[in-house]
Image 1 (cartoon, one colour):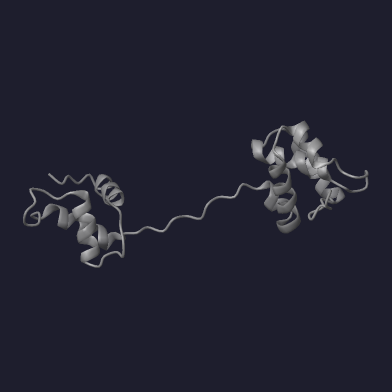
Image 2: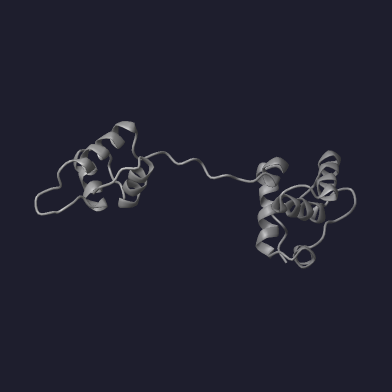
Length: 152
């Protein structure tokens, strides 16, 4: 069996923090699970940690989860391993000026050959007016819904 690339060796302070977290049980489930995995995998003063297969069986997780937690601890440290990663906030496609153009376009007469503006026509018009590079009809719908605008 190949040697583990990321070995978990907790300091006394880290071990105490993890044991306190697990014993109180007042934390998100993922944080508690990661704390338990790190405590079981610890190869510190108390001897070698549990093998991954035994940790998987005891905590009912996959081997990939144990390896991922071990790697995250080795690369980013304890805080990053226990904290929940949030996705970065998305940037808005259309600013206030673009919304104003969209609403004005939706309130204007539809193009020749069409009875009314469709979401796809409005999206195409925004691109044509160079308000945005690309935009989906769903984004147009959400903008119009937010402003309580009706295309009718």
